[in-house]
Each structure stands twice: as structure tokens, then as C-alpha cells.
Length: 173
Image (cartoon, rainbow, N blue to C red):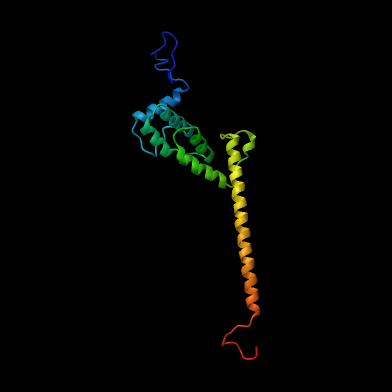
């Protein structure tokens, strides 16, 4: 988490505190979130900045900031980004189930085979397997309904051939 700086450089203006894998911009955004009073409409950073703040707040256990960003971020993310953050342990597990479901039922999924996806190939395989299971289930349900309909239609046909016992029917029919 914390890395040793070069001798004599610790605590200088250039490197007051060195944090591994934390950019200066992300750290500045985090400090802005900690020390600035702002409303939900104000955006101190971009979507990528919010994602970095979410990861940093999770890593350093800033619970309040994590909670605020967790509320602001979902509406700004794609389905794939939400699922990616859920599986990369940013403590947003509740996003995973809805994002997975949204990807399974999405009609306009971009081709995942080109390698540009945030999700591992194994997740895309799960998504497509789940889609196939749903298709099979729907086909089976449709076949069951068709059989019921055919049976019901045959019964109606048989009943229609029998004369009705109605007093409204003219005599001689």
C-alpha cells in the first residue's frame, strides 16, 4: 500500500506521500471529496475519476465517500462497467446481479469476441449459456401451451359436432 520513497525525497513538495498505484489526479479527487462540501448535482470529476475514487475509497476504507460514490455512479456507468466493478471487489456486489441480468436480456450487446470487453471471456460464456437456457425454457413452455391449445381445440371441435341442447334452437335442426 505505501511504498518507500528514495532517500531524502520523503515529505518533499514533489512527493509528500508516495502511494503505490494511485495517481496524483485520483488522490486529488479523493481529497476534494473529503474536504469539499458539494451536492449530488455537482460533479468534481469524470466517470473514470469516480471509478478511481470508488476503488481508492474501498482500498483505504473511506466508508462515507464509498457510500456517496456508490450512489452517484451506477446511473453513469454502462452495464458492462457495473458488472466489472462488482466482480473486481470494489464492495458493490449488489450491482453484479442486476448487471448480469441486464446483459443476459440486452438486445444490443456489442461483440465480446473482439477483446475490447472489460469482462473476462468466462463471463461472456456464462451470459450466452444463460441466454440459451432461457431460450430453451421459453420453447418448452411454448410447446406445452401449444399442446394444451391443440388438446383444447380438439375437444372444442368434438363438442361442436354434437347437437346443442338449447331451447333457442329451431325445431327440426
